[in-house]
Image (tube, rainbow, N blue to C red; front, side, top):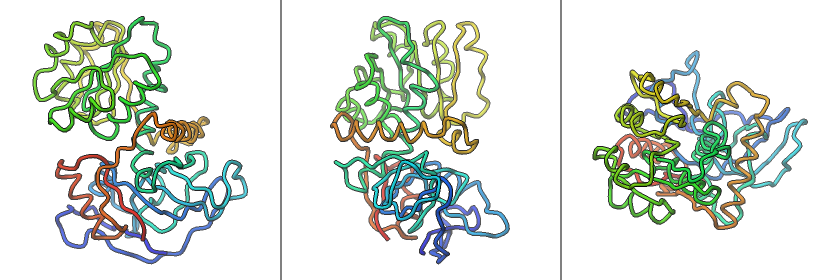
Length: 336
């Protein structure tokens, strides 16, 4: 089978970072599904792994997390899927990825693809949806709030994770949502998907939020740039509030949160698959919930650009675009 892979963590500007290779098609055993990959989405984590990870023993590393495909074979322990099912998933960073014609994925982290979306539209959703849903309902546990009129501030809300976060909040909760963005097109997108208030994170955050006169946010979810906003977050968050983040700020100082007894939560979508937690199937359940929300027309895909066929040229182009910071929406590729 064909795959696009790399051996050394070169800069994307260097020649021949990726290569097209031919490898043996894997065999499904246990809880695994053998998926014929139809469409993939490129994520920032793909770029981080390419920059930092050297494959062992000069072997090929196949990147890729988000994917849509068709089940071609099932392992002997598979219970929830059959050959022919159309599925979507974000995979595991412990295994070979989705830049390949075929891929093995544990059925417990797979959901049925939304019927109302094309393969490319659906490929934009899994990783960001899992990250947003897990942060809101598994880490911050917003469903347990005792606040009468809860407010949440979402920093960096116009990207893939933020866009799903805002939509989930609006369709599944009664929260007032303050979202941050800086570009006019990003602000327009957030208004379209239901953010109640939009503030500019390129300007000082504190006064903008206070000027809304809706009280201090009980919850804050910082998606990127957390290091720049840590003190503002500590100043803004309500006493006994809940703060969640997914990025990797250097020299993160947690002390300012002590005086308000703020709980701090990190979210990594790969925790369950990496450590094979007992609730691993929670990810499949979340994806099926997201799929139904899409088919019920309650949330939208975040597809931005479809660059075309899954090959070395287009994967390199996608990595370059994401590294530039100029991409809008999720970048997808479709078909070999």
